Length: 253
Image (cartoon, rainbow, N blue to C red; front, side, top):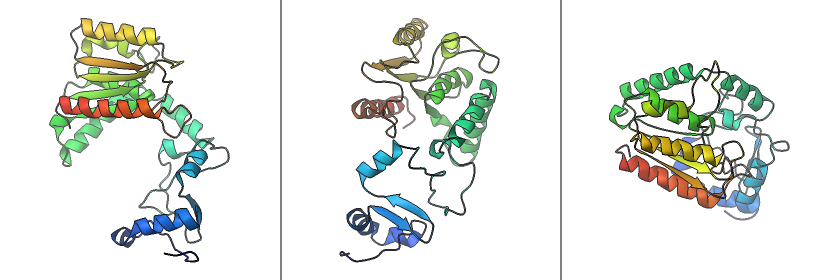
């Protein structure tokens, strides 16, 4: 492709990927870094610096609900993924999620695991990972499901007062946690004190649980979220490598 060429970028067309999509991507980066699709009515950013800047400025650049490869802009499947939602809808849905009882979350995960096992998944390799709210859920599910083989919890809350919706936290369930769980935490996390994390780790080890908790001294909460200012590339990549090693060590990868 040369300068002056025009391209109808259609990521929904399977034939696009069987030809030479990389030539199109190169053309877009060089000739149309802010590409406008007249067919679908959206813009696409193709240069990393632009994508990162837009991701960190949601008040200016809104994604609606993102774009799924099987959908067009007129055929989105609401409500979509909460991670792809802009405010105020993101915060509205987040409030709804925060009101879901732990018991319901455990039941939903059980149903998910059962569905996977009936549809080609290997029930003997059941594993879980989660971030923030999901990180706490990892610990809870390790205490809930005896069939879980391994888990990795990213900066999930481990202690605190119980509520009607969240009657117990991981620190209250040490004796019930049976699956091997790796915890990845930030030493600069303003919402999860390191002292509490270390106390939790000591309790797990004292109870003979197979666990490890890694604290990255300079990392804040959300250090794996590469679309936020909290992202710390070195710690995020190290944590991901530890996740892969943990899953392999425990026979699920």
